[in-house]
Length: 388
Ligand code: HEM
Image (cartoon, rainbow, N blue to C red; front, side, top):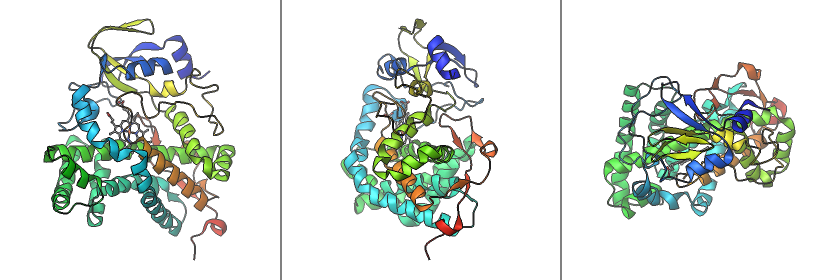
């Protein structure tokens, strides 16, 4: 029995101290996780004080005009509602051919390089940020600068100054885009935001756009890299994946469920608004709560043999995208990106292999989203060479 499963059975709600010295209740188990996430009136998302963090040094929350993921009730809905339709299945379906094109261009570039190639820097990191740039409507000539600033903000532990500088750079890049779309709207998210919601200030517009970039970039980048690695380590599951592209959507769901189970356990952070009893423990008003998404997705109450990756598994209601009113706004986009990235990569490179032993991979262990800093791969030249 894995350590996470043992703990979720024996002590599903327990006090832990985070590396930055803040104490929180770690709530494990599928039902308790959902109970916390579904009750925003009892467990607030507001984080205007230093919150439990996996990094030893806490940074105080940034001043972010429209950080609706850290807000409750009407304040949360005020912004979330303005974006909801942008991420509906229908809108994402329209974007799929462009995502495919971006993915194909990056795979062409991978194929043109001599192996080994690091798939993180060439594929899994740039694709999600370009997809968001595309969705927002950031013009082509600004893409490079947009991506550089994004990579800096999202890089490992940027200093507060570096993050601030890159944020300033993004503000600088986005300002003329807002002006241009105000005069000449196009079919993009920024055009719709500036025209349909003239009440939004520049600061709000900027923080909504940068917020989407941050929320959608690191998560998708890490998941795609980990999904590639996991499939390479499970040839039987990879064979199922490649021989049944029509079932790729369901395979992505199982990969998401199982891979979130590997995250290092920071959990989704909430704060009790009132005294609440959960799992036999009294959580006092004001206490921090870390709802353990990883343990929830590995809970045998969710599915049998939950620790096993099984692409044949019947669909289950995993919580990789959270649960309740703050559940991931971008989940349809993330699903489309992951499916297109994985299907395209393995059909283009059916003989893909890790170029180093897995123990030598540099894993990121301090993040909610577990990942690798680089993923060097190689492939058989005869079969996978670029088309002449
Ligand atoms: C594999 C990829 C992704 C994963 C695993 C993921 C996971 C999550 C989770 C667990 C939450 C809930 C956080 C909480 O309740 O505290 C969340 C929220 C959110 N996600 Fe994602 N996400 C992914 C991709 C994306 C993408 C592509 C976007 C958009 C571009 C996005 C935008 C958001 C936003 C805006 C929120 C805040 C929602 C709110 O507070 O109402 N995510 N995501």
